[in-house]
Structures are given as structure tokens and as C-alpha cells.
Image (cartoon, rainbow, N blue to C red; front, side):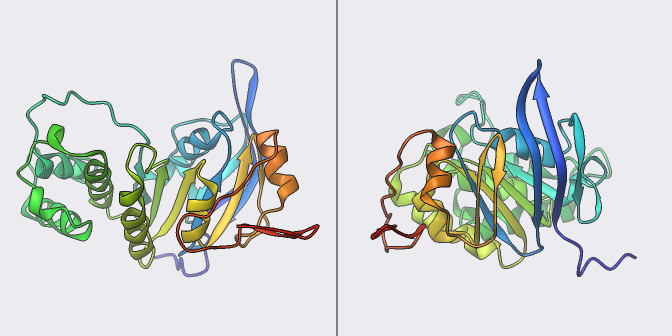
Length: 259
């Protein structure tokens, strides 16, 4: 068996992606080490979701390579789980929370029916996100925050090495956001996490490293980003306001410190 101790979780080189002749991602180069918690910020339409779909092997790039734990993304997709920004479903469809989480085992299921092991893993995932007490509730009855935790539980049933999340707190209340980010910090103890968001100050408080994406990727390691890069990304001056405990996002510049 290949030793993966020193293999990057994600390695992207020279990635270009376009749709109908329009460039969406241009010359993306990125290395994410195992155990990292990377936040990727940027404006809507900047290519964040496209990058995640590329990591999942769902998009064939125009050129460039993506490796997941040393293997091509399309050949190693079972190492990666994904929590989408929005999940469309009929709120009146009669499916319970436990059943929805168990569906995450479809890609691992060996027979026609779920095994005892599948059910054990699904139960464990619900416990891990603190939602085991609502396993019998209908999914349509949940709040936005509860539903996001259930979606994380479903992703965890794949037993991934890497967890990708696309704007996971976009539709939840601010109070839930704090506990959700705390959950991700706990999960990061056992897996690599890549989180995309447009909420600069909230994300920067919790991640280990921060990158900016608007067709091109700006990443130098660490959590500080320059005001020039932010303004270039968003094409306008951006004020960063702290959520909760003050935390540095922008380094000191011209006598001003951004948080």
C-alpha cells in the first residue's frame, strides 16, 4: 500500500476551465496539505463552485491537472465528500433524517440492501454532528441550520479524507453559524477541509489558511490578505467587519488595521 503520509491532500497545477468560450478558472495552482482547513473567498460568479466541482472530478478541465492524495481527481473521488450550498427537495416528501443520512452510503454499498455496518456508520455520523436526537423527524420539518448539519452527516458517511463545503452557512441564522464553524473545527482534527464562502471576516476567524478566487487564485499561505488583493477581487473598496472576537484579516497598511 502506498504511504500517503507526505502526499498533499489536493494538488492543482495549471488548471484552466471554460464554458461556452468564457474562462471561469485561469491558471489555478494550489497545494493543500493533509489536515489543512482552507477557506476560499471571492465574489459570486468568481469560480468557487466550479473549483469544487473540478475537485470532485465532475468537470473536465481545458488543461491542467488535479490530484487527490496523489491520484487523479476522477479516480479518487471516494476520498472526497461534498456539502452543497443548496439542496433542492420537496419539503413534503416523506423521508426521515436517518434515512437521508443513510443515503450517503449508496456509493459504498456492496449489496442491494444497506448492511448493519452502513447503519452503524450513519448513526455515528448523526451523533458526530449532534443530530442523532432528530433521526425520526421529517427532513422538511428542519430549520436551515439543522438541515445543514444533516447534510454534513450524510457527507461523513462516505468516511472521507477531504470535506468540501460550498457556502454552507448562506441560508442559516448568525447564531447557528458560530456553532457550525465550531463543528467544522472539530471535524478538521481528522480530515482536510476546504470551505468556500463570500463571508470574509467570518470564515477567516476559523480557517487555518485563506485564499482568494475570482477566476484567478491568490494564495500565499496563512490568513492575512492585502487590501489591494481584496479590492482587485471585488472591483471595489471592501470594509471587513469582525464577527465576534476581533481577528486580523488585513495586515496593517497606511496606518489602518483591518479586522
